Image (cartoon, rainbow, N blue to C red; front, side):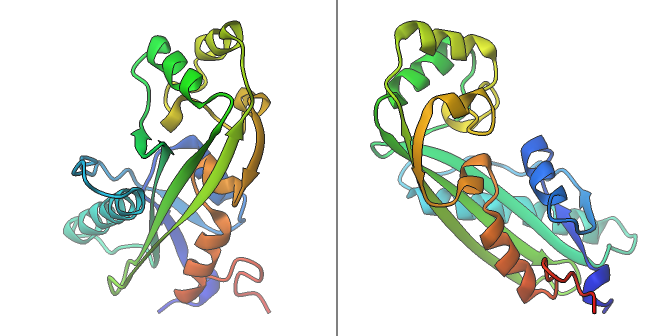
Length: 208
């Protein structure tokens, strides 16, 4: 096996936000889309949803690399999934501005919970770790005009819960309890702990 400093993260996602977060760790990484099925039973709990979907995404990339016939890069495949939950209801990505406005309106003036699952698979052995984090987010009370203005910005159209905490959506949020990066889409502290199990140490990156 290559030394820890040469092992790569293989991100099973095309999300610009997750790419930026992984890039911020200053470790070698590749992007490989997963194209995994993201349907889940209605009776699954939030943690079941995010851990299973994160695992599916990582497994899809692992399988595609193994079936490609070429040698796989020495590294760890990382899959992740994030959902927003309000009163037990999972809020996905809105289909248009109207649905985005409805979602934001339902979140304003109260708290909701964001769950992110992370799955790591060793590209050589197939060893798998799966875990998740949850963060409580409180959104301030908004006027109808503010709700519509944010929905029209388009920022939340490709995001669970119809908002982005790292963008204009930051002006909607009054507080969080838990990991901020979990809300962005990838809990970095959890990821770092999981990667260390596979020999990728973020803080020293294998350097002596």
